Structures are given as C-alpha cells and as structure tokens.
Length: 407
Ligand SMILES: [Zn+2]
Image (cartoon, rainbow, N blue to C red; front, side, top):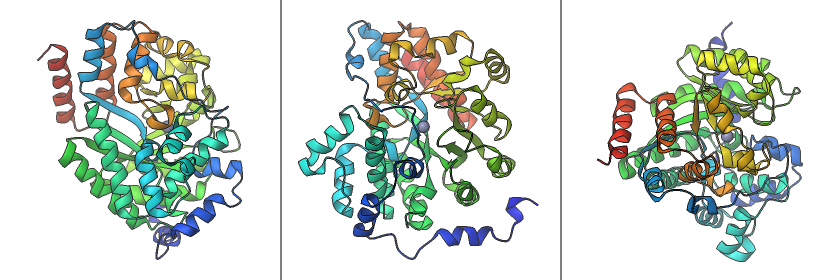
C-alpha cells in the first residue's frame, strides 16, 4: 500500500503539533537539560567525523588572485544549491532572536562579541558546534522568526549576487520541540515572498529528513507535499552516515516523493564512503548528492556518477571545518573535476564555517589556481544542476554570460 493512501497520515502530522510553541523558558530548559551528545547531534541532523574548525577567512583577499578574477567572482550572478537555513543565521540576528525568545546563546554573556567569538573560534568539540546550532534553532518559535531568518539569508545572498538558492530546512527538528507546523510553514512562505520582493532572490526549499528518525520521514513528506505551491522542490536526507542508520526504511517515502514530483537530494559521501553514496543513489533515487566527495575512493562509483551525470554539491570550507579533509589544499575538488564529474560549489552553513558562496569561489580559485574559464564553468554548472524553471535557468545563464563579457 502506498504511504500516501494510509489513513493514518493526517494523524501522524497532527500528532506532532501542539497548541502553542514552547515558551522561552521551556525551550531554554530543554536546551540545557540532559540531551546527550549523540541526541543533540541527531537533533540537528548533522554529524561530523572530528572536531569542527573554522577555516581561515583570509583566502578571499589572497594576493595570488588577479584583481580581474576577484571582480568577476564578486559580480557574477550565482546560484547556490547546498545551504541550510538554520546554519545561515548570522551572529547579530542570532543574538537578537535569542534575546527576543529568552534562549541562552553560546557566548551571550559577553554580548555580540561573545556570540561572534562562539561562531568564529575554532570549535574544540563537535558538541560545542552542535550547542550553537541547536541554540540558534531554538530561537525560531514564531512565524516572524522563520520569516526573518529567511529574509536575512536572502539579503546576504543578494549581496553576493546570488539570484537563486535551494535551501535545506529540517521541519521536524522544530515540530518535535513544540513548534506547530503551521507556524513554520507560514513564516517560511512569508520570508520567501519577501526575499523575492525585496531582494530579487528566488528561494526554493528542500525539506530535510534526519536519518536517525525514520518515524519523521512520512510527516516530512506530508509537509513537503503540502508546501509544494510555496516553494518546496525536494526532500533532503542528512544525519550520521553509519550502518546503524540505513537507507532502507526511507525507500518508500522517497519513492512516493519522486512519484509526486519532488526531487531526491540527500547528503552522502561526506562522513560516509562510497557505499553511502551508492545507497543514496539506489535506495533513495538521489538526483544530486550533497557533498559526495568520498566517491573518489571507488572508481566504479565515479564512473557511475559520471555516466548518470549525477551532480555533486561540493562545500570545500565545510569539509575542512568538519574534518572530512585536513585543509583546502588537500580537498579533492580538483580530482572530482578532472574525473569529469558534475560539480557545483556551495557554502553549507556559511557563518558557522566563516565563509560565503563568494568566499568559496575565491578560496578555491586561489588554492587551485583556477582560470576565469573554470570559475565561469562552475557558476554555470550550479544553474544547470538546479531545479529552476527552464526559462529562469536560461535567463540566469544569459546574465552570467553578459557579466563575464563585461556587459
Ligand atoms: Zn549540508
């Protein structure tokens, strides 16, 4: 029987709802209280292989880059395909939201400087990183909060000439801490409208499922289907890539999502190796892979990805910060490109990794001695790999060509 036909679907969603979001005290209490490291890691859907460090910010001002190339990168109209809403909240806004909702943000005892330090300092432990991520998430309680972080993200994107972004958001993380789904979806929809109206930035949503919580898959799909008219284009999939969290329990939900026209956009090959990427392809029907950098460990998998033209969303600074690679110079991006794989650049959780999409281009262009042609090819690839309407894609590619040509 199709999941969609199961009579319990509506009940499953409504069972997650409560009348009101948790009060600030309750949220703060819950954040402080008793969640073990693994629970916290699971709660925000992220797991990293080692400690989390902030990459240096200096690459954007690298002296090796020709000024014309820096200018081109800054001015180029761009698309971004791998970016988390909760991970995009800047320290200033996080502090304002935390004060508004009475949430204890790391570093808040020293005001904005303290919060900035909590963002910028090398994270000594994964727990410290997650504490920040969960605290930011906990600040989002009312529609205006979700709206405000969405608009702020659009402003940051517009400053970089990013015209279109596919933004990952994990609704059940918020629903399970007591925020009604309607509050979330209303805020996101309003924020998305304002992003377009105020900044000309088109946002699409990817609703993410955390692989440790199979019971949240169907409610996430339900919300995603419900919100298709308000910009949801796909289902994401994140969390620890470990055998104890297999893909199989999610096969049916992803099959139904694809049958309904949603795209399958899982993370894989970040913490996990080739088998994880194969699972994302075969079990979930992945149309793009978030990260995927570890595919290089398996030449047959590389050949498969190339033959099927499955794009990878590569986030170099994130990979350095989370210990997937020791430093940018060792990042496999040049080998991914040399292998003929479809690749776009993305920023993942930009302020938490001291980066932006523009910085990713600047840092990589400096680290890998990219030509102007390579930069332009990657910028075009992000548009081609996106799920923008075809006419919008052509318009953005034309705009890129005009800017590249000095128009
Ligand atoms: Zn991600």
